[in-house]
Length: 581
Ligand SMILES: Cc1cc2nc3c(=O)[nH]c(=O)nc-3n(C[C@H](O)[C@H](O)[C@H](O)COP(=O)(O)OP(=O)(O)OC[C@H]3O[C@@H](n4cnc5c(N)ncnc54)[C@H](O)[C@@H]3O)c2cc1C
Image (cartoon, rainbow, N blue to C red; front, side):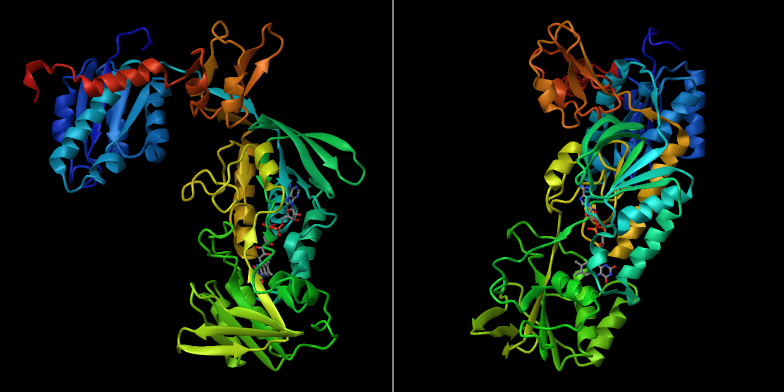
């Protein structure tokens, strides 16, 4: 069936059990659709995505000589790949398929207005039919995948990912900016939940990494240049000590750049007394194995911890997130130090030791008589310095009493924030960032490890604040994504990309600046230079086409004509032969 044929469109309207049909009159939508221009076949089906539904589509394409298919069902995110495959199996190009979202966009959000929902469903199907008539087949392209993954960051996340990749027989290069691997675990003493020495955890990972010949480790190094696309990222990696730069090509990238602990300047007199420190600084001291001491050389008799410092604070320096490690890390530190100290007190805004084995640490701390007191979110404790003394005053919200404590050491448990330089890294790798500054995933639920840049994965704290257990879990997930990409050797790239008509391009560079993915460059081999698109980098977002003042850019699969046809179909419904139903 060629594109040159008159469009013969099949419309398949799905009940989705009760999900759509409970609100929308799907039978009426299918009946009315039969009268739209170019529609050769319509039907309503209970579950279009089921085996029976898929078979029905394939048979209808053959029997009614259909060359375009519209399925009105759920979100394309859910089943567009399924239906594209079905039409391909029936001999049609996958881009001659159009999906209408009657569930999320109609029945679910208009559940209380079934008549209006049915009218909207008819509008949506009519618009999709108009667009389908103008759809064109597109070539399905593939690119080769270099079987080598770049891992940026050599903390627990980066090392876990590299070991997983290497042990499956693929190459991985870990690029770490510091001289030592291990990230923040290098500066922790013992870790929750199993009290293991952080150093031992990292050393185990390092032994595993060094035993695999396919893992290359580059310390004191950063990626200074990145070009290319999924399957073939060309990089320059600079050793900051020697100044030498090497070139490497990678098929996939895992970003594991982690975090840095928030420096709580301006909080609780931090910086104004040497015995007021952060939990990260406290852990660093403890990790040397020496006894904890205050500035005059004595072990402290009273230690106080304050939680949520710079965390969960709306509009304050942007740290609105919960860092998800701190309640348990603080409780564990308090529990451990109680063995060496007379009095230990924990002040918290909220406290939730939420992981497996974490609540036991909280219970043990209480059994050891660590004192816990809750302050109000809106009324933080006050710290006053008198000579060398630290005096903390607050209201305990559970008893309603005003309290005062004089710790010899005050430990502030601070948020995790993105490391310095994250902005430049985000630009280099074309990654977007969330409100808290960490890298954005492609989809928070459905694609938490991939990013909007195909072939680049994120894991560990680089994605959002979390502890080492969750970081390692994500690392293994990202490594699995990278290995499955490398094992395929070739990867399909989207054909719904932009295309430049060189004869219309006015060399203004607007599209180059507008493209968020760095997919457009000026071909300097032409005089004057014209814009060209690297298709493997293009995400089909349409920003360039919208920005181009010369109308030289077309979005394949979302052409102006296709979009305008939908608007017209909505505004000017075609006359319905035979008076409608
Ligand atoms: C005080 C404290 C106590 C904690 N206690 C525990 C605990 O007991 N149990 C637990 O499970 N978790 C704990 N955590 C959390 C744990 O530290 C993190 O979950 C873990 O370190 C995250 O690992 P990561 O590899 O994602 O990030 P990181 O440890 O931050 O490692 C990232 C690495 O990437 C490198 N890097 C950054 N940018 C670049 C770049 N551009 N190029 C190259 N390299 C780069 C960094 O130098 C670093 O080595 C604690 C955290 C803190 C702050």
